[in-house]
Length: 408
Image (cartoon, rainbow, N blue to C red; front, side, top):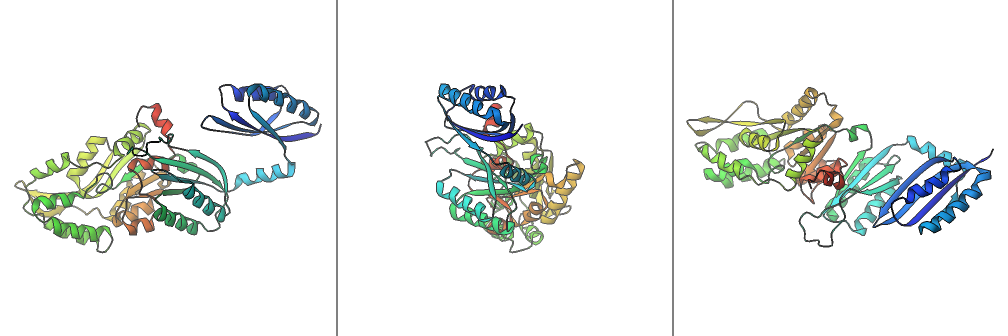
């Protein structure tokens, strides 16, 4: 018996049981469902079903579906599909797949048009688009407002590096963040995430806070900025800055720790990561005292930073052990991954400074967060528009997942 391929497209107001009614009609003729997809935007349904049936049944199937759609108050359209076209479509399944995530406080048609143009220019096909954030309120003044959509792409970019550069240029030009990732099993199974501390988990540099109390704030801050921009070696700058803290009473460290300005989104991010079983590490060029404070507060699994030398209740201007610089951060990331039996492709690193670049490039997913220009220029992904919980969207989390747990 000759077979026929038919694509039906149903549009209209969504309601419970609509898909069940359509598929129940199809089930009477024992058809094979070759593909099915559904989207719902503001209660407006778009349902597509590609099925294969015996040619002798096609007329009756379409007639029954037409009557059923009238009863349901929706529109239905029938399109025959050529077998050769279908076979060509099936052959495309083996092609590379990418996930492109777009994130911002809000997204405009112009921004999405620019992104779609880059996708098309690279010869990629958009298979699906979904929104990860909740519906956008009309009150744009709310601080928590954010918008994120995810494109599922099929194909191989003509020039992936050029595509990445175009997206990063668009990011700085239009105030929107991007993440382009291969859609593979590693992306779906991230297990270890490593954070820089100063200017990432907290909105300050602890050494600057200590310097202010020691009366050398301007001197230390100038050295810090040069180091973060990559203008001077981190070890050299670190040694110079610590030396300027000599004689500072350690009692000021507790006061600083208890008043650390936590970055927007950290509470939400840590809750979700811990709930879903991620191992979390702080890899910091800052100090162990503050790292341990954050470790205890958020239940962080690992913490590596620099230990200040203390004698008679005062800082000596020296430190103990090996400096945690950029190279050491990358080494620690790999070490923790080995201890946790996690493939390096399943790791994530987040940081803002030049000394974070080695671990960002080592991790399976490296994210520059409100970073210095040099870091953004060398990172594959960056977040500049919202808080640190934007990382969740790059991992594929939807707000609806979090709503179920009552933690937004």
